[in-house]
Image (cartoon, rainbow, N blue to C red; front, top):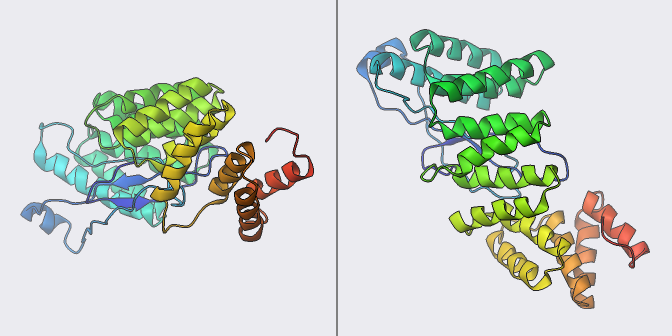
Length: 311
């Protein structure tokens, strides 16, 4: 997702199925210029930018991407107020103070009723709250943000995340494709990762692989694309390519610890290459470190019937 120098990570529940435990990052651009008028109006409110952390399989984060950029030059004073209010809302969402975030966004709308990031942020807030009524409302806020700013690719990505949560995967893929095709957009790689995972949900494995390869073309360090492609290549019995990507993944996650999914991938690769020593070592590590994981259950099932295909 976005990795701008001035960004704050907000954590949300992963909208994808439990099979896909790699999550991404919602980043809120929160650095603001100092305006005397706004300092008077918003005295006592201090906004502090955060350093973003790299997206990894092990970060419990989310695929949203939301900015507070100006979307035109109609009325910079009112728009700047809306931007500040939207940034404040982002910080309150981060702390799960949703009622206060709602109040800030209403003030943003009052200052500039056409400020697209405020509508996008409201969609994020309503989706975070998660009730049936608010999930229904969120749809219209995301659409409004996109309508107000056709080049606001972050809203396309966030709407795609929402649509994925609602299991409207075909519509989600359309939104991720828009964001993933926007050259120069900071969150483009994250959108392509989302696109690939959405195609997996749709059962379109070839399209998923193409999306992940596009992500790697844009950022060779995409851990999500590496991990997903290893599984897809193993399904196609393209073992040498899968092994190369797996080895690259281990380098990328060095120092972060190895997840159960990566351990199971290593076991599969060792098994198909008849590397008994490595397979046994990784199996012992998986069963010892993550005995209750889904991957450990899959391994136990396979060990009881080595001739059966992996599930």
